[in-house]
Length: 323
Ligand SMILES: [Zn+2]
Image 1 (cartoon, protein in one colour):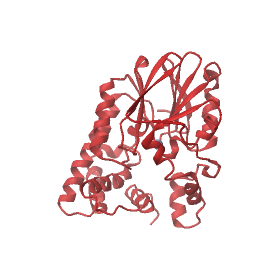
Image 2: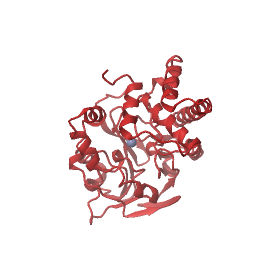
Image 3: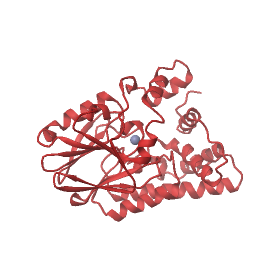
Image 4: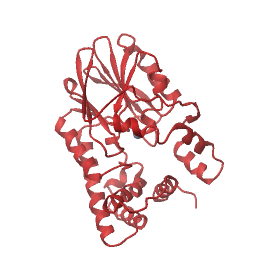
């Protein structure tokens, strides 16, 4: 087991590196580096400027001889792009690339809103800080992509081919994986939480299942998740199994006329009484968000819960909410 306070680069071989932060819990995302002849490609930045600067500094022994020329954002959650302005200052030499759907979504939940929630003196702020209190959103400036694409984009990184493959909407609207065929490595972004529970912000779940199949079909030896320790395809298969289980279970609950929050609690109890299944994963409470995602798919007229309610539900399932 890695030290839970550890944030460090790991050489995964063939000029690929993974920066893994702590245990991969809320906001503790990973980044990646693909090194070619004289230039590098960076996969994602981190949740704030300080974390991103530390990550870049730790990469300096490698990037000194192969500076970052391309930054790919795998998706629009802030823990994967809030550090962009540090890694790729506007007007500088680094080109920022993302899917068009990702770029469109990046402006929806900006650093200002998160900074305001972190500073909120009420119970809502207290809840928010229990998830994100360690991050410095007030220092973040949005830095949007210079170049967007849909479906696929092939990038030359100093003589190596890197494939950007859009597999969303799933976790978010525009999820992209970074496939490095000559290193048999895939950087999955948040299509994989290793040791953590998937969270379906966008869906449909069936598309995330298809995304898992697409990653498996790439047959990588090394899988770098968006959160958590380095993985293999076994972790992708487990995530797929979870998503199939949530979709089937929530569909059944919907057919039985059960309210989505009741259904999530019921399913959490069911999992809790089957030790060793997905309840061992971190952020287990995300089940509440995932059940709602299935209900929205089944009936687009369903009014989803607001973000604060969703976090209250997740905290309640994990038993961490005071009272
Ligand atoms: Zn993330």
